[in-house]
Length: 122
Image 1 (cartoon, rainbow, N blue to C red):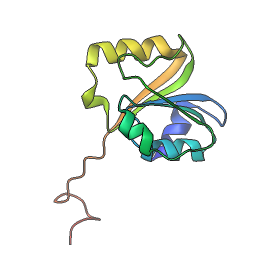
Image 2 (image 1 turned 90 degrees about the vertical axis):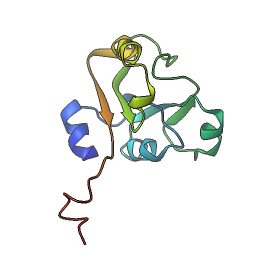
Image 3 (image 1 turned 45 degrees about the vertical axis):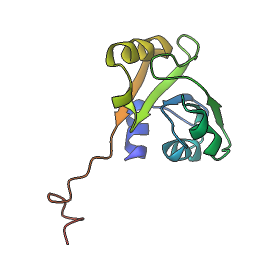
């Protein structure tokens, strides 16, 4: 799925990507493994403290509403399992501010329905 998203948004190794609400870096790791230059934004000091150091990843305090990123500095902004914590109006305004023209914002959730999944049904 991530590789399909990367192809769709058109980012390549070295491109500036930010993840808001990065938590301990579970999704962040997948972005870094693809060579992206990731800024992992996480408001919780405790979560940032438990995150693993990853090549190509800079950890930063902040939130979806106030990332601390420069204007038009990111090619892709991702909220993996975190957008429901962000004030929608302020978070989308912040996304527009930090994305380059033609940049993309993606919100991801891992909501699985075991009763409807052919893979998960026993």
